[in-house]
Length: 334
Image 1 (cartoon, rainbow, N blue to C red):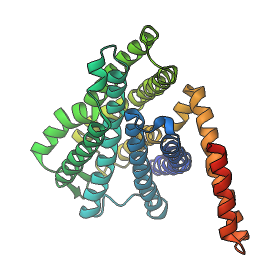
Image 2: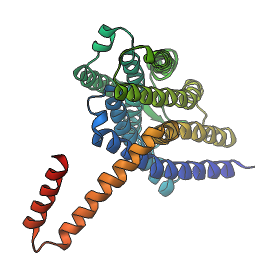
Image 3: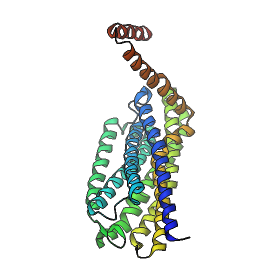
Image 4: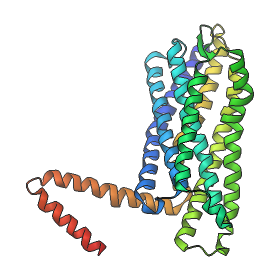
């Protein structure tokens, strides 16, 4: 098989994977956001808040990936090997949304551990205010970090968009990819989710309202399964990046370069899948979440759409229609 055939396979694989993840991933993340925002049970739940932030971050990554896919389909590559500014911007955008996703999963796991702890003071140490501050600070830190780190990326004619600074390369090799984008978020998520799973198995012994007990079990199971998929999908990519930045393949070697592009496409597809798989994990994991999705889509969103179109078709007497609707709602709540 020639290098051109391998490059064509790599390009086609990237396109199909990106389109599939974009369509299914964006839809799934939007449904996640709707469910967590529109069901009162999740209001004030910190793990749900972190999962909302993760879903927004996932949508951001999928949109960045979609833009790169369009460039690939038009020009044959994403253009990062031809433009210094685009090389830096692409890396910065992709890195910041990925890091936010990684650490929001860790935050959700940590919150489930504290929320299900047997000691009251441990359960009370985490508040919604602290969760909002944590999400903002984490996002701000990784935004600044990504902007600063992206400055060390430059285009080299033979290998494309790579880290050109020796110290930055050492930092990426020995700290960033193995620790910040590798073991640190994985260890945080894995340990806290395991401890939370242990806590929730003992929750029957505590005097906890049945609704709160069910919610803790539901969120713990969802987060625990999410962490398993997160580690399985991100672990291979982290090691690949350490190797790739230290051993870039020159374009003057067509066959090795084509093989390297295909391997990169496969590992990047795992990252894309990680950004779009959370909703489907939750649906498969929790029967309660499936009922909540059905309730939001059918009872809330679909009825709201029907009311909107009904309002457009009955514009002759809008005030009377709104008045009757509000009266019916008042009677139901009475």
